[in-house]
Amino acid sequence: MSAEGPSPDELIAAYASGVIPAADPGRETPDPCAILPLDGLRVSRKLAKLVRSGRFEIRTDTAFGAVLRGCAEPGPGRQEVWLDAPLIRAYTRLHERGLAHSIEAWRDGALVGGLYGVGLGAAFFGESMFHRPEAGGSGASQVCLVALVERLRAGGFELLDVQYLTPHLARFGCIEIPRAEYLGRLARALRRRASWPGAADGGSRKGMPG
Image (cartoon, rainbow, N blue to C red; front, side, top):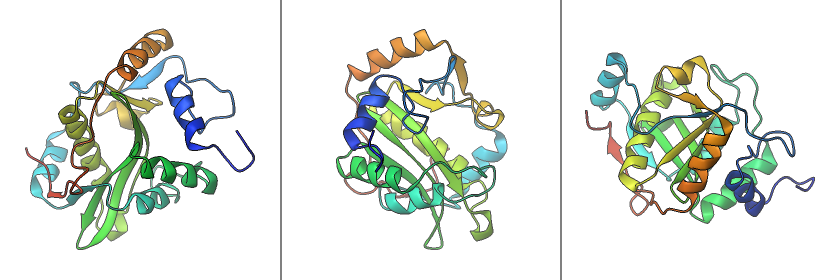
């Protein structure tokens, strides 16, 4: 990795070998590793109501750069920010190659929350999310997570890597598995193909189906 940050190919190689690109050079993924089973998403009644309300217009890949910049800003539950300019450039190039994607929550024409990650084979690596409660985006990142899981299921993805288990992510059904098991699941997912639904039209919709 150069002083100017990782290249897109270096990011791809890191993900494919089970290394977290944003971590210290050479640092491996944690043991255990954190994933969200795509058939194990837990949605509270409050979140389900918010999803059905249509408060947010959910889009995909219409403002990838803006989502990156949102994730790079300190915010609620995100005081330590690791997403710097070299990484932003690298992920933007991955997006241009069709490998990095964003899920976006819009309200009254403004981006109020979102998340992004990288898809390789049938594996998706969730990187970061944000929301702007001061702009009416309370709960927006959670709705984006629900939208992400729906798209991954529809596209034939098998693995959703969330890197680290936190109390917040545990609420949604994220679990930890031994590193050896994770690497086995990763290898299987990389050998298979999946597609990112909504790529042609931005996947815009009000809310999500309940």
